[in-house]
Length: 230
Image (tube, rainbow, N blue to C red; front, side, top):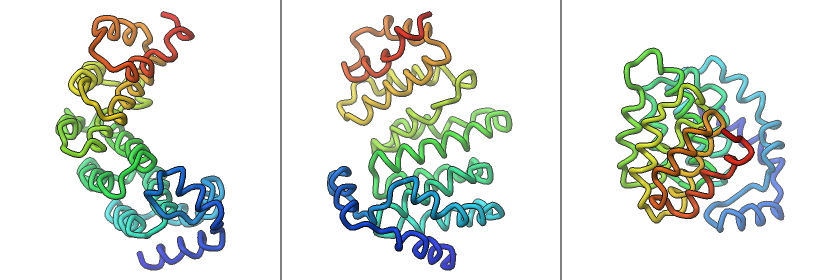
């Protein structure tokens, strides 16, 4: 693992741009230090590293992700998400709690939303293997950390016909009264995403629950309904 982390540093450090780093830090509200590397350049520089991990098992992937999470600059956390997203097929249902632990460290929307995709992929690939792979998300919905609650809301993004619609709607209503911006936004995003598959269901749900959601949630959820029609 130390060798992999060393390779990551050797691949990224030559691309560091202090001027761009200041702009990237400002964009993220000065929460994190940056090397100043655009995402396309980061991914291109690390493609061979990610490829060589194609035989790594779940434990190795998580160890590497945790080691990258400990690095100071934000690009290393982005790389960790890239690695997990590329190799999610080797992650197991029992690895989801470890992913949720990462969610709670150095938390902000950029890494949280990336990990939401990884969690969703892991759960989706297990839908036929286990009776209720989403039970852990029911628990996550009541977590004290709102970022974990956001994961619960977003984990079905892109599932389309495999979406548990009852769960989607129940989650939205359960958190409808929250004041946190990132929760209100996530509710709308989750509903809007499913609207691409079934706009009528989302339109009916919003009408039946008119007044339950914040203006932000309502706008996000209904954003594409006109162009999608019925």
